[in-house]
Every structure is written in structure tokens, then in C-alpha cells.
Image 1 (tube, helix red, strand yellow):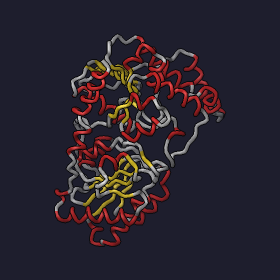
Image 2 (tube, rainbow, N blue to C red):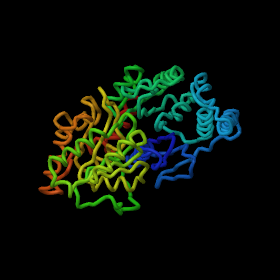
Image 3 (cartoon, rainbow, N blue to C red):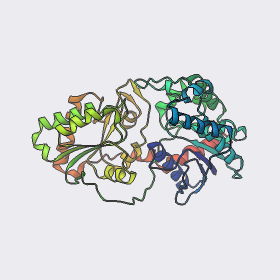
Image 4 (spheres, rainbow, N blue to C red):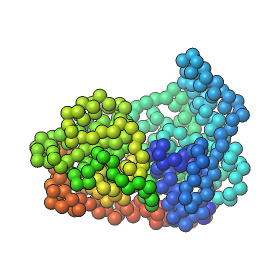
Length: 415
């Protein structure tokens, strides 16, 4: 089977979404499919063993000049006209120019694909918009929906309504109606999005974020990581809605109840945390057993730490439901270290780990979090090598074999 992948970015350092997309692409190759990647990374990036075509930006078009004029105007006068035009058009001039650039490249593509897969990151969905304008691909188009869209369809506490929400809702209604197949990283996300766009229920399949083979370029540990200690690691952005306060208070309560653990224990938080800077500085200065890095950390370093920490932490929002499958979930499964899941009762991570999984708590259940950390510490004290996740079922679910089975079955059922 020949698969054409149209993707925003294949730069694994720019976002967790790009990491997930590259893992997806690598596993398509590992599954034996013939894959061609068209990407809009805007950098000359190649993936080993994969044919990649870098889409060039159109630099002679009305949208291009209008977008540049907006930037010059804002830089020189402070006047930002983007929200005004987005309210009217639904999207920015840059967005439309990017879409036209993707369309132009695909119109010159001679790859006779059996399946055309669109992948995106964040709130972009540029490849999806481009494919929507190209009906010649619709009968073999698989649209991958990695997150809820538009923003006003996010569950609380994510409650941002864009001024252009009507146009974006119309766009995704058309995507749900025109794409032959739709794919989602989680069962809960498929159900969630189908409640707004019912056609997804007819076309949707679950393809979770993938485990893929990585050759680490650097196996050295940073100064703040001591492999002889009991380390709890949270690696990932701490968005406004993802407060680490309960985790930190739970860790401090654990230390207060087990003062002998202070010499052995460390809580490490890596990733952008701009919304929580003041709180984090206060906790870090007060508790030397906590290390915080507010910023991006290279993927090689994070991946190596995830595989060598004592416990990986997956922290989500305080909410009624979390339909997201975090992009780091496959890395945590591959690391085979126990997971401290801080998530709502109804969450995809909890659904996959199972209702009987003992190391789960709501993000603000401080006492329960402290008790779980204490259990981990006791196990670590007995034998650090016994701290294993041992979930072959989840490793299989995130594997190449599962991915291949889903795609082959989908094509066979529609022949």
C-alpha cells in the first residue's frame, strides 16, 4: 500500500505534536507501507530511510504580501490587524498562504497513493484545510484529529472561544463530511468529537500515538539527574490549565511524613511553565528536593531521562473529562517505569491503564498523591529494579503491528 503523508512539521524539537507525527510516520514505514512525506517544516529536514519533500512557501501572492504588511504595520505602529481580519475570514492571511503553498505542492505530486493522511499539530490543521480544497483526494483521505477542534469544543477548563469560531466550525464540519476516513489517538476523543460532528462516528478509527524506535545521539545525564536517587519526572508543558500545585504539595507532604527520604528523593519538572512561574520559584527555593526547568529541553535528554527515572508523571487538568492521549504516553510505556497518573476520573490515560490501576489520583488530591509516592518510595527502597510498569498489552496497542492491522482492515473493509 502506498501512503502519502501531508504534515505540518517533522521537526521533533518544535512540539510534542511533531514528535507524535514523526513516530507515526516511522511506524508506517516499519509496517511495510510505501510512504512519501510532504511536510511544511520550512527546514530541510529528512527522516532516515523515508522520502521527504519539503513544501516551499509561496512568496508571490496576495496573501503573502498582506501577511507581511500586517507584520510590518504591527512592528512599526503596534497596531495588530490580525484579529479583525480573522473575525471576518476565519483565518489569518498567513494561514491561507500556507494552505495555498501546500495545495500547489500536492498538485505537482505524481505519487499515486492508496491513502492520503493529513497530520497536524496544535491548532494548525493546515494540511486538513488544503486537502478539503482538493476533491481528487477525498475518496482516499484519512484525516487525523489529534485534539478537539475548534477551541470552543475543548472540555472545561479549556474554555476559550475564538472570534472566528463559526468559520472554524464550518471548516471542520466539511472535513468530517468529506474525508473518507477519520482517525483519532484516543477512544474518548473520537466519542467527544463525534458529539459535535456525527460523521466522525461513521468514519472514525482509533490510531493511538505511536512507539517508534529512536537512536539517541546523547546518553549523558544532566547535572540535576542522579541515577542513584528516587526520581519522579514530569516532562512536558505545564499549560495554564495544568497546574502542578497538587503534585508539588503531595511530594512535600510525602517528604514531611518520611523525612529520611529527603536525602534520596527528587521531583523534576521539565518544560514550559510560564503560567506558574511565581509559584514554582517559591516551591523550588523552599524545597531543594525539587528541580524545575522552565523551557524547552532537547528530546534526546527527555527521552533518556524517561527511561532512567524511577517514576514518570503524567499530569492533566482538573476537569470532568480529559479525552486527550498525551503525546508522551507512548514514551512512558516504552520506558517501562511506573506511571503516576494525575487525571480526571474520565480520562483516556486512566481508561488505558485500567480502573484497577493503583497509581492514579485527581490532580488536586494531595493526600492521595503523597500516599502513592510513598508506596513508590517503599518499592524503590526494597529494590529499584522492581519499579516496572510491565504492561505488554499497552506496548502492543502502541505497536507497529496494531497500526498495520487497523489500516489494512480499514482498506479491506472498503474495497
